[in-house]
Amino acid sequence: MRKLIPVGNNGKIDFEPAFKRLNEELSLIGMKLESGREQDLKDLGEILKRDNNEKPFELLSMLAGIGFEIDISGLLDAYERAHGMDWLDDFYLKNQDELRKYF
Image (tube, rainbow, N blue to C red; front, top):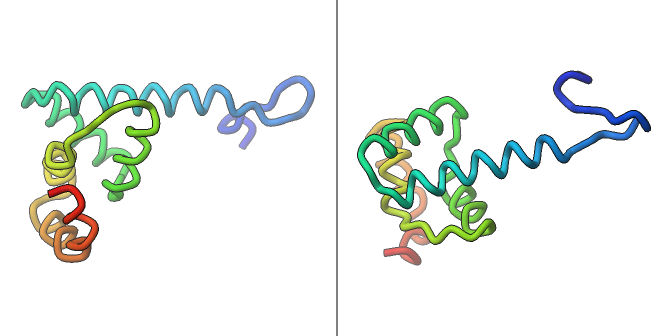
């Protein structure tokens, strides 16, 4: 476990490296979404699939928290690439009220 959670010389957990990696990954995701290029959306789909991320609203909020203004349609396109059209259909059905805020 110590390899996964860095502990400093004083015995306290050092969260800075983990936060730095998270911020870097969020920045990468934000930049790929902003570009809107086909290859970037494919890459983003792979990232979301690898991380098993199924929470678009949470990701959208985190991206907004670091200064990105992301169009949710591009984000949902990447989620469809990661999890398939059936997942996206189910997401739309379960989240109709929340999605109305964006469309």
